[in-house]
Image (tube, rainbow over all chains, first blue to last red; front, side, top):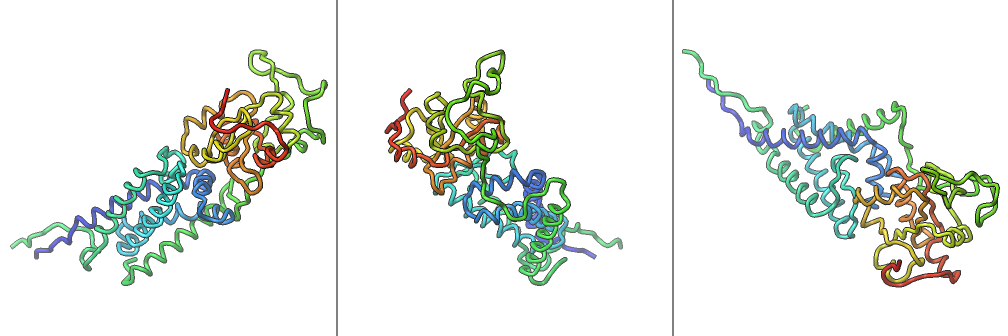
Length: 152
Length: 193
């Protein structure tokens, strides 16, 4: 029996995206107060909601990343993380438009990168990972399998 | 968890992440406040227990900081929060030569600022770690102001300086508007030494 592997490259893109978001989430989970301060600097949310976002967003990123790395929810996970990329693009974009030279907060409080075109470009790359990694066909949901020839 | 609906899968992940985040905060030894409060400081009078403004009296805490260097601002205590001061106290500190930081945008600074103030527009420098550390390393107190009223920039800059290690950061709540209205010394254009 010969089994065909699905388009494994989409799976690999999802893995890469999942790892990025897991990495980003862990540093924010380690310092929620610092992350809340970074959210405040964007001046997008009403102050009362800033802490709630700081508490929950990193965990949503972590769960989404794990869902992709472990292939538990390829479509849902890719949709979620791709959606977050769009949200981050808008947030960073408005900071750039308003000349806010603030901590990006993309990878937690230890991330020294500030908002700017580099952060926007990085976000576009992640969005591309989500776009191209999204499973188009049912077999794209599965992890790659190796061909096995049936012993005669 | 291979849902036929990707939207359903995404919603489940969001709910799971949200629940984990809220639960983790509830169990944390240093939880965030559920509802964030606007950033505020503490009044200098509350900190020092006095109701008077103006220059320090003779019985104030002994002056001196590192290596016996006289501390011109020994009446300003250390605090974990920004110290709010009013117009009279700000004028007194101005006369004594306190370092002034203007947190407004550069354009507003150029249109008019307290004489001798340094332009440190918070929105433009919040991501500059080196500058923040340099500002936070001043051994003497610094006084931050912005436009007054609902202006949050001075408080944001003050909290940022404190998080970078400064322990004596004052905030003039009346801002440039109150200072100018009182007819106190102002400058226009770039800062002059």
